Structures are given as structure tokens and as C-alpha cells.
Image 1 (cartoon, one colour):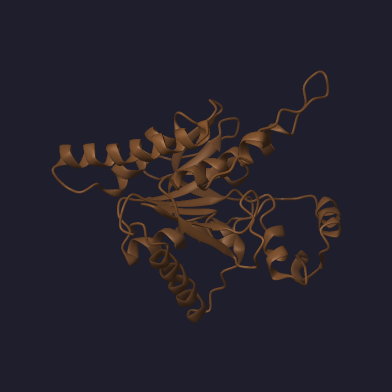
Image 2 (tube, one colour):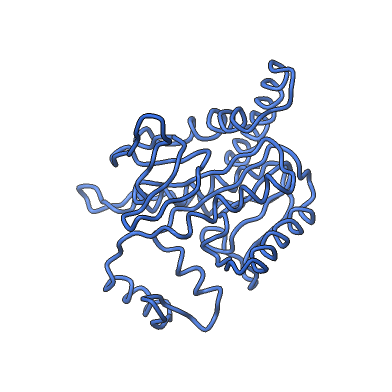
Amino acid sequence: MNNYEDWANLVAKNLAHEADFIAAIDKDELDDKAASEAFIRAVLEPFLPENYGIGAGRVIDAFGNCSEYLDIIVYNRDFPRIGMRGTHNAYLYESVLAAFAIRAKFIRKTFFDSLNTCASLSHLQTKVDQAVMVKLAKKNGLKPGPNRTFVHDDPLRTGRFELIGRPPAFVFGFSGIKYSYRQLQENIELWISNRQNAGIKTPMKALPAVIATQGCFAWRNAAPLALSNRQMLGIGNDDAPVRLIALQLLYLLNRRLNVTSDGYGLKPSLNAYSTMKLMP
């Protein structure tokens, strides 16, 4: 076991201890608000650089689109926030590193609500230089599609391309689906089926980057957790699935770090950490 795995297992234990401690004090089950606060204390606050803040609210874009309320939003402090008395904070889409839907316990309703909340981010968009996108699309073998989109013969590659410039969302549950990735998979498939029956599309950009709970996880089949198969999601069991969330955050921070170089022309990189073996 390497240091990264040691850290992930320790964080997973701390999360469990936080939940047990809060429940013991309140003489009741852990609620969603306390669950979010525990997740922030155990996972995000010790992990994130100081120039990233942690809040809650909605994410808005320059085109008038707005997400649903998100329990945790990790944002760059260099960007402004929009908040008015008596309302939730609003965060500019370009400032957001990641967003989270946190639940104390997954039952079907709370699980589906979490997935729908994360999917609401897929309607947001940022202003991207079209010439840059055309160049990227050509490099990746995509062709122009309708409404200024780009498509590939392989739907998976189209889905991955649509993730460019989009901050990921994560779903984490303290309990409710325990060590049963098959149960997790069945619930995800039912959620997608319900959306299809309602005429709502579920492209890759509408899926959380990682769904994690007690002992099981699902991840979106895209960098840095890309799979060789053609499925949209990878799924399995793990004693500390929170490590998958940390890996995604490392990947995101690495991409932000690589924007600038130092006086020698060198760019800092976290690639050596984000390519560590994760699963035992």
C-alpha cells in the first residue's frame, strides 16, 4: 500500500467517525446538512489549496442558465460571487472547480435527487473560442454537428469531448447502499431509464464524475478514470471510494496548474500522483 492509499483509507475512516460522532451528539441519524459539513472537514478543507473556497448554492452562466442548489461548491477565490440577502449564493460557472451533492443516507428518492442535481450542471455553458474548439475537434477526430457541436462516430468519444471546460459534479452518500455495486448499478440504470421515459436525454456530461458511498462506487468513463471498454460508467467495490474523488480533484488542479510556467519555462505537474494505482 502506498502513501496515497494510506491517506485515502484514513480519510474514509475519518468520514465514518464524523458521522458516528454527530449522530451520537444529536441522538439521531446524521442529516444531510451535517453530512456536508463532515465531508468538508474530513476531505476538502485539508486537501484544497488556499486559493480555493468552499461554499454552497447555485451555479450560473453568462447565458442566463442556472443549476439546482448544490450542497458543496469548490470555487476559485479570484472570481466574484453573487449573493443577495435572503437568497443562496450564486457562483460564476468559470470559477467552479467542482460541485457536490452529499447525502447522509441513500434511499431511492435521495439518490435520484442527487443525480438530478448534478445533471442540472450539464445545461450550463461557458464562452469558448470557437477556433480553439474546431482545432481540438479536428485533433480528436470529431466533425462539426448541429448547433455548433462536434460529433464522432463513436458516441463515447463525442461524450468525452463534450466534457471540455465543464467542472465535474460528485455524489457522495454516507450510507444506504452498502458494499453492493450491483445495487448501485441497478439504481443508476433505473434513474437513466426514468429520464428516458420522461423524454430527458442523459449524455455523459449529465453524469457525475464519481458516485461514491459505503464500499462501492461508479465513475464516468473519461479522464483520468478512462476505461478500455465502451461503457459510460465503471463500477465496483472499494473500502475507500473517496480516493476516486480525490484523484479527480488532483487531475483538475493539475490542469489549472499547467496553465502557467515558472521563470525557467517549466510547468508544475501532479501527473505522477494522479497515475497511481488506485484499486487493490
